[in-house]
Every structure is written in structure tokens, then in C-alpha cells.
Length: 74
Image (cartoon, rainbow, N blue to C red; front, side, top):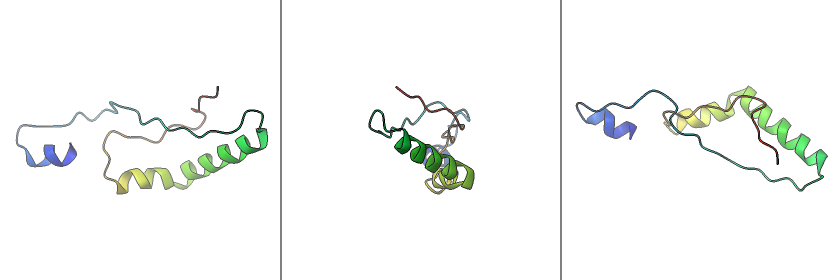
């Protein structure tokens, strides 16, 4: 949509994050050590800018890096 809006007069994209891209990583129930490793990996990817860089390289608009501690555990 970004490319379409750029080349189409009178069309614009709203700047807000209008959708979330949900991702999931599964760790076997009871595997506390595995969960610690995954949490650390994700925290490091956030802190290093790796996730933000991937979003930028893909040219995605309206996609943000989820804040630390935003994981839902079930």
C-alpha cells in the first residue's frame, strides 16, 4: 500500500499503527529454562535494533517493535 499511495495522487496512508503482527514462539509447558532463553533472545533482538532494522529493510509502514514485557503467556 505504501508504494501505491506514493504513486497515486490524492491517496495517503494513515500514520498510525492500524494492525498488529502477532507472532508466537512455543516452549514446552514447564520448560522454565527454555522460556528464559527465548525471553533473553527477544530482549537482545529488541535492544540491538535487529527487529527494528528488519522492519525498516522490509519497508513496512505502521509496524512497530512491541515493547519489552508485552508477551502474553498462557
